[in-house]
Length: 253
Ligand SMILES: C[S@@+](CC[C@H](N)C(=O)[O-])C[C@H]1O[C@@H](n2cnc3c(N)ncnc32)[C@H](O)[C@@H]1O
Image 1 (cartoon, rainbow, N blue to C red):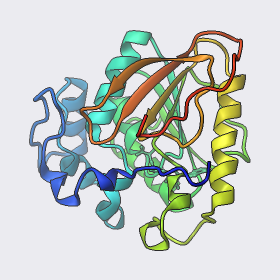
Image 2 (cartoon, rainbow, N blue to C red; image 1 turned 180 degrees about the vertical axis):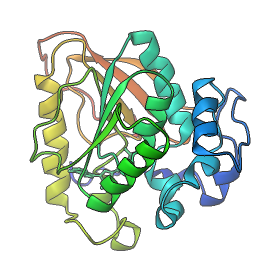
Image 3 (cartoon, rainbow, N blue to C red; image 1 turned 90 degrees about the vertical axis):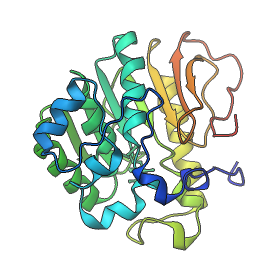
Image 4 (cartoon, rainbow, N blue to C red; image 1 turned 90 degrees about the horizontal axis):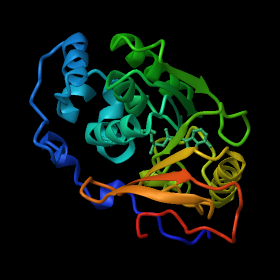
């Protein structure tokens, strides 16, 4: 399993495409120079800004890796549409980075988000962004290592290939602040599999560029969007019974 290749979004999208509207619905409008309040209002109206308009409020050092490591706004948009239709009220983002997905998701509706993130500086940044965009009551962030902490129960769990970094070369890692290893990759993907097996029927799993492990056979694939920079999928647990092993959830599937 450790040798399975996880595509990174950088394989698919070049950094200089940051300026390009990613929405396939043509709703992505230039809102450069707008205040966080104006951007928040625009998202609430369904007028999604370009990533660069949102990202300019992030700490400068996080921008060069934005397209590779942080979910694009069009992903938050599509996810929100799916979750609205399913009546999902709560989402846990496992490996939430600087909170872009949670903050944008909270702006798009009334859902509650909890982000779990191992890097302290990213947790601080996520809390700052949530405050800035006025959603800190519904977008909360926990500084913790997934696998070593109790994960709050939620209607849906979101994973943007959080453990792939363990398999990247040292140069491609975010920083040298945390342990990155094959051992961690195996441990963390197995912890996700266990979480999903133990979750109640009706739980949803959203993966963006996969998570590297197997989706239990009790989950059914409901939505898939291949038009985004990476593959976005939503699965729902439909039975308490596990009949055999489920499929690997990576971008190649
Ligand atoms: C690809 S980024 C995705 C960030 C965010 N979910 C988004 O979509 O914008 C993956 C994040 O997961 C975090 N991460 C990886 N393994 C983790 C673990 N075991 N516990 C907590 N955070 C983890 C990394 O530090 C990184 O910030």
